[in-house]
Structure formats: structure tokens, C-alpha cells
Amino acid sequence: MDPAGAAGGGGVWHLCRRARRIAGSVAAMQIVNLRFYVKPELADEFPAAIADLVQATRAEPGNLWYLWSRSIDDPNEFIVVEGYTDEGFAAHAQSAHFQAGGATIAPFLAKTPDIIVRQVEGDGWEPLSVLAVD
Image (tube, rainbow, N blue to C red; front, top):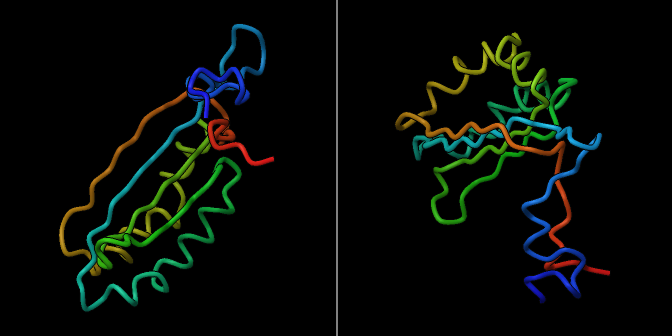
């Protein structure tokens, strides 16, 4: 792997560049990362309990992705990684399924979830050129 990108189509430096729609104009999206700490006795039930929320969120017009995973280190920890257009992010917080989701999730929680929310340049996932597969 060539970190400078001479042989790898952009390398690590490509990771810092984002797609530009119009010269001088950069697309933006909202990234949300959440970590849920679920009660051990309810952890196996949690994925089914949030299935409707997941399906409804993924169907939102401004949702770019909504990915849930379970930690391989702690089976009671669940991570959600969300991507939205700017407009989609605001609409998601006002949606009926988001409003109802808190009431669905709350009984499963062992402690307060953690969150990271950031606006970043780009409009979706990009290939990791340092691990490009032909």
C-alpha cells in the first residue's frame, strides 16, 4: 500500500478529499453515531424490538444509511451509525417513528446512551483506496 497514493488511486490523502458537486461547492451530510448499553437479560430481544424503527428510518427520503451492529466485545452494547442529508436529518428528528422510538428503546437501557453528531463534507460512502480490490 502506498500511503501517498501514487500507486493506489489516492491513498490516505484521498480520505481527506470529498466529492464536489460543483466547483467550489461541497456537499454536506450529517453523521450520527450512537452507543446503546442494553440490560443483559434483554439484549437478545433488543434487535426485534427496534425492527420497526430501523425499517421506517431506512425508508426516509433523507436517510443515506442506518446501520446497527452488536459489539463483538460486549454483547450488551449496540452501535448505530447513521447518515443523513441536512434536510433528512431535521426531518428524522420530527418523524413519528423517531418520537416513538425513545419509548420503545428506554426499557432496554442499562445506562444512558452515548452520541456523536457531526456535519461532514460529502454525500455518502467512498471507496477506501488504500485497500482497493480490483
